[in-house]
Amino acid sequence: MATLATRLAETRWSSDNLDTSRLAAAGAVLLGTFLMGLGTTWDISWHARIGRDSFWIPPHLVVYLGAALALLGVLLGIASEWLYVRRTGDRTAPGFGALHTSAGLWIALAGVVWFFASALFDDLWHRLYGIDVTIWSPPHLSLIAAGFAIVFGTLRLLVDEQDRIRTEGAVVTLRRRWGEWAMIILALAFLLQPISLTIFPAIRRSYLSYAAADPSGTGPWLLPMMIAGLVPIAVFLAPAALRRPYGIAVVALVHLALRPVAAVFADLEYAIAFPYGLPPLMPFAAVGENISKALGFVPLLIVVPAILADLVLLVGQRWSWSWLLAAIAFGAAVAVEGLYAPTIFELPALPLSSLTIAIPFLAGLSILAAFVGRQLAIVGLGDHPPH
Image 1: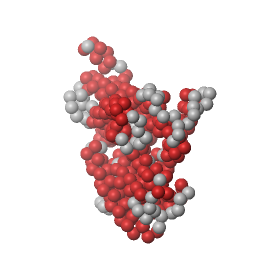
Image 2: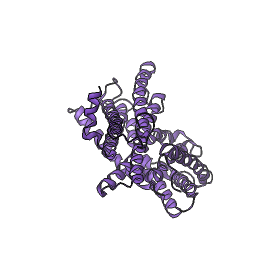
Image 3: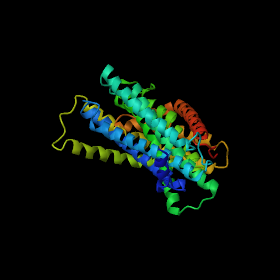
Image 4: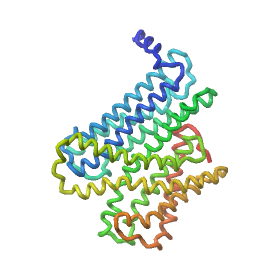
């Protein structure tokens, strides 16, 4: 075993420069989580159009292929850092524990293990209770939370590497620096995917069941409330991760830009899985397809509030409480969007008078969510976010 470890330590994978192995590990995990996201979007459509005939349906295979790739990336990252310490004797690299590896790798590893355990939980749930048609079931929410943990761990790994280079004063090429920034932005955008999945069933409850709801009640406001109460947790990580006083808008825009990729992927995979045409649609396929298509609606509602919040952060970057104003702006923008969101589904807009309650309430939710995001940045990203 010692001989094998010695040979591995001499390979270029355990290079004296940690940046190569860390970026390779982060890239593998991000690619895996990207496949997981594509497979999940396809899975939602598959359940709506075809159903769930077995655990081994094609969308599930794509999801678990992505999870396996993420696991491989994490394990190679841990191995490379262990070999780095063994070869150089440098035990000062950012991290903790006996292996002296980045905390992000351990967070990502815990997330992958959690994800596979949740997959077994999901299969058991379906065997016990049958097929559910909601994302808001315990195993589904567990899978979503595990996916968030995987991406967050990768983000921590990338931030650790940026901080290490900055601390050591290492010289890096402009191409590599832009590559690291791109991976951080992608990781931040990927963090919005689990949150969007958690939010999007509220579209059906807010608008697709609107006819049976009281327009003056809280039903049509469920989606805006969830956006204001969950999205800032992820987007307010951006300033801390980028080590800049802003960055929320670019994350939201990248997340929006990735949505068409998921739609094209689903159409392509359907063509591969059913080369002679799709089977007969399920009885609820029309409703399910409307819900599936509405998945792209959530990012649209995120972009404008994110841009407005980022402008507030940019203008008030010297103010210690600018994040508070940015959160208020985010919530207020979501409230205004909430008035007109029903019109996208050919429904009447909500009464203007409802803003008197909606703006302060949604602004309060955004403040709470932004505070959680900032605390997550302090604890999880190892640094205090900029003002």
